[in-house]
Length: 265
Image 1 (cartoon, rainbow, N blue to C red):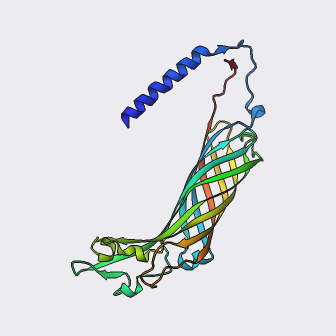
Image 2 (cartoon, rainbow, N blue to C red; image 1 turned 60 degrees about the horizontal axis):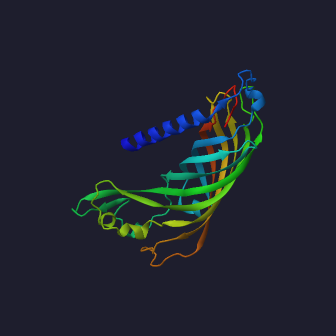
Image 3 (cartoon, rainbow, N blue to C red; image 1 turned 180 degrees about the horizontal axis):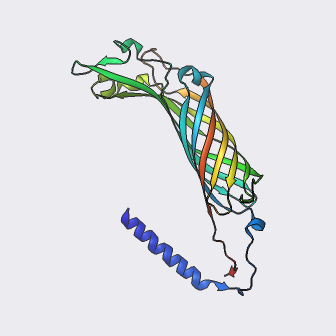
């Protein structure tokens, strides 16, 4: 990793040196750029958001509310058009179904390989693989410190959604966990999904305060990918799983260098 950083630094310095030698400066009497006049700028936005999600349809019969974290990278054009991708990871503690019911002795206590009682816990895990999204921000800056690119941001896209039951054996001595048989009870379910969000995107002129807050809706057409040992068959039904989430996050904007002088090649 250290060598890669050194190589990258060398290449970057060489590139900037060559570019600097090729650039010629216009007269220094060029008028400075007014931030408020320039307003909308092209650049890259890197949002990191937290989600609080309420499941719907079949998903709500298996799991309770869950939380998520979402990380994305988007290109924002001067026109406020956006295109990019993001990745979401979900986790929750409420699992309403118990495929291991016939295997249990009492509650979540099971007999380990050494004959002792071991505690087995269940939780919800899910993820949405990098999702391609496109959208537009309707300019509606609030306050005189807001960039004109601030406003109502609408994004739509599609991706691949998966979720399952995660079993945790604290003592690491339950045979079902250690020999891999547990996969027949985890209800792994995956499939394509559609997602849409509407948030208020605030970008400050000085780049110090940048955030988004709003709602996100995702609907998936998912299928159980396991042979379920407790049921004795594989459930091939297409599930219409969905969730509605509140999203709030921090945004890192990366713009081109501002300058009061213009250059040409």
